[in-house]
Image (cartoon, rainbow, N blue to C red; front, side, top):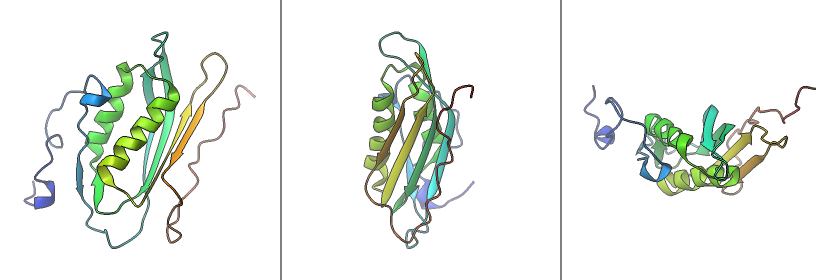
Length: 155
């Protein structure tokens, strides 16, 4: 499709790629940021994220919102989808899943700023929301509210 050298290292985009069996096996890929001289915010929303409770094996569901201000790298979105999907059969607590995702992205991208909101649906009557942020957002960037209302039950 393209001869752009920035895309030559991508191994998943444009090809059939199986869902990784575990997050540790998932290959997150990055591409060069063609707009690295500008501060801007990138948002990924995963409203149907799933993982497993490590104690019961029951499914846990979350609405994830990932915001980041890139520096030299952008995450390739298909690899991100596969990485997030790899949690489907992964047993971990909500906090561990949310922070693990953030740390993998920070290690890969070295962004100017990153935050993740993990809005977990209730199990046992208690919703758990988990938030991680690398520091203060650059003052020059508009960072919108994540737009996920707090859990209100049936009320």
